[in-house]
Length: 387
Image (tube, rainbow, N blue to C red):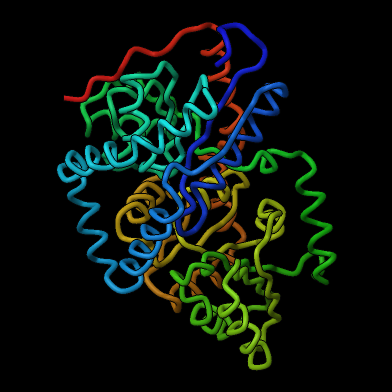
């Protein structure tokens, strides 16, 4: 561990490689931000669950969402009470792994971007001195994120701070509305230039509309059905579909190409998400917390569908309150909405402006700067009280 005021802080970022990879992307964004703010820092990203437990969790989580999504929604709705016992179980079962990570790396600061990482590290604080922070990756949160030993809560928006403070009986001052940490490239001033270069490389004309379809890589968005609905629209536009690491989805999308009247561009896993989003005129996707934050950072018009019951449903409620995207019920409504947005520039501009007002492209650097300043000052926030 480094002493207060030294130039080599030691940061451990813990996450989980769950479906959608949003938590991992947030952790990587924080890593890059810490290294930008403090190039001499030692920053590590790791998972808090052992690989076998992580694989089991992902399998059960994925199967539940695919086959019985209402069950996950019901569990999420009751989490305020059930999380009390579950947090204790995860805290005890994960303590050995937390000790192992702490003793191996001796961090000054532990930052969690996944709720399951919080209970064991909060329990570890009884025996080890370190600053514990959480970066909540949705526009609401469940009780797993909340623990009286957490020193810093970083949230998406002041509304989220007020909601969580009231729900869990915390002082609202314990929450900092920094935004959700996203790739620093979303704040890169050269992004418009890179987007124009991508459009040219894809063979798109300067004024040719591009609809970007994302979110099907984990099999939780029926992308072929959405694509076919889009293709029934009379408006001229091209569609770019991102299949992620899902080879079967990519194959299914490619098989549709000869039967479509609209031009289709299919790509797999992309690392330049900011460039692809920036190049699009309208984005059709699921309402994940990281995805929404990226859309808001760029002020993009988005059509959201098929939310996961629980966290994504709460994200939708936030979006609707702020008028920052259009939420639809099915593929046909999504296609109609895309057509309406492309045909009405004023409506699209209003949606883009509402999204841009929520954008926090510098969130990761703000969080990193806050924690580094706290560390340099040798101070920690007083423990939150959960009654």
